[in-house]
Image (cartoon, rainbow, N blue to C red; front, side, top):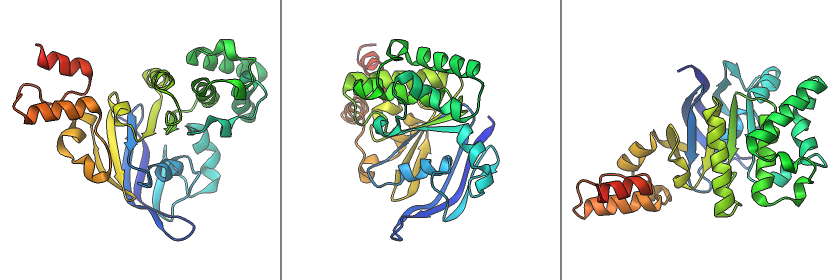
Amino acid sequence: MTLMIEISNLLHSYPDGTPALNSVNLHIGRGEFVVIAGRNGSGKSSLVRHINALLLPSGGCVSVNGLCTSQKKHHPDIRRTVGMVFQNPDSQFVGMTAEEDVAFGPENLGLPPSEIRELVEMSLETLGISELRSHSPRSLSGGQKQKVAIAGVLAMEPECIIFDEVTSMLDPFSRKEVLDTVKRIHAKGTTVIYVTHRLEEAMNADRLVIMDSGRVVADASPRDVFLHHDLEKYGIELPPVVALSLMLSKAGFPDIGLALTKDELLEALCP
């Protein structure tokens, strides 16, 4: 797998001098689906903001496709490579309609009008929101707003998209819709970095990275992280199915092992 993002000994402090990131090392390959999780204040959002140069290192190095974020001349290329969708979609809207908003990014890249129209159409269709093209983004539901925000990033054709707590303000139905959208985007080859505090959203990830106090404390497949790390000491709740399967296994059901989904648990209980 080709290395895309390389973070080495990254240090960062808040304006008041409080350390936010402490010697973080993380490598992400092209096409990976990496979930970064941790309690509030663990440093996960600060970390991903370094990947597209919204924050710059106090020490260490962050590079994207070999381009160092500390060099301002690389910022345009890095930000075309790495798109970012934030927690609150309202903070990202600039257009009067969903279509105008999705077109904003490609327009700023200086693309010809015909190509912009194709990218906007592709993005709206991918997100399943073509019928919303003439609606004001601010008139939409929370899930629809987040889809428009994702479509706006997707239209710029980034190689990597960072999703920073994008489901935290959504109801369960909208949360599932948005997560399904993220999975579809990854399935088409886009590198996905997904920040969350809901570990049930990490089940389809290639890797689960756990952060605490500005450090990476676990980095493995979701199954290996759940099996070999005590996440409660980092203030993280296990997904209910995972917690139940571990409890049953400890209670004398040796064939259960670790189940990541309801279907896995039911198959283990009723083979």
